[in-house]
Image (cartoon, rainbow, N blue to C red; front, side):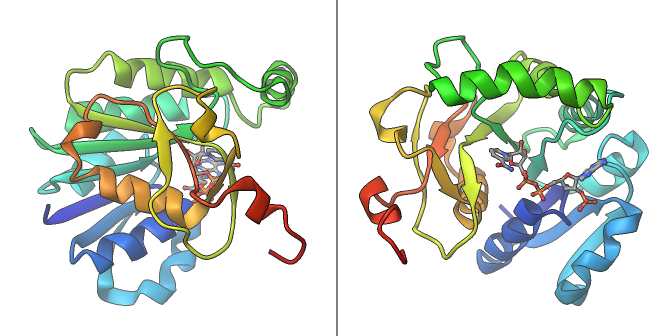
Length: 228
Ligand SMILES: NC(=O)c1ccc[n+]([C@@H]2O[C@H](COP(=O)([O-])OP(=O)(O)OC[C@H]3O[C@@H](n4cnc5c(N)ncnc54)[C@H](OP(=O)(O)O)[C@@H]3O)[C@@H](O)[C@H]2O)c1
């Protein structure tokens, strides 16, 4: 792995991925909405940024040239198919043989065999229609984007994050193919470690065409201790 492109590089997950990728000695470039360029100032000339939306095929084609790894923050903002347009652009335009790693949440299911906690089932009943009605986001768009990736024969990984929290790294997250596995019981991932998993997936062939659901390593009893 030499050069990686991060689509959605200016977000919280994107910036953690910059740090992990630079630490591994990769050349880092990425796509960021023009209005968010200022968020990347601290990285200076250590990264190369292509201003644009991640579903803009012209910008994405330019940004992906020469990259052997692509890290995509898949987000369902708006109601115009942003996530699906982003996923299709990456699948169509990345260099042949590039490793493609996408982020999303637990709510995405590859095979329908995930067993969700009641709280998440309720959230998924209530939130999607409200955010779509308000034209803020379309969760169905993220589901269609994931279905497009799952149907692709490229070297993809879809990393499914649990509830996210800030805080120092607890190491590479644990993962399972299905939500409901006891290993995922905490339903909490440090955002920096979500990014660590995404970057590590680039060079882990065992994750090709997998949709790992992840959690951080600390035991729930440690997390819930006052002051921890
Ligand atoms: N938040 C959670 O609890 C959670 C839980 C599980 C999984 N995930 C997954 O984790 C990933 C990162 O999520 P995050 O919540 O941590 O957010 P984040 O890293 O801050 O990323 C948000 C991304 O969305 C972009 N964005 C924001 N508003 C937009 C708009 N109106 N139109 C287009 N793009 C817009 C941001 O770009 P700008 O920098 O230009 O604003 C940024 O690239 C996502 O794939 C999400 O599905 C999140």
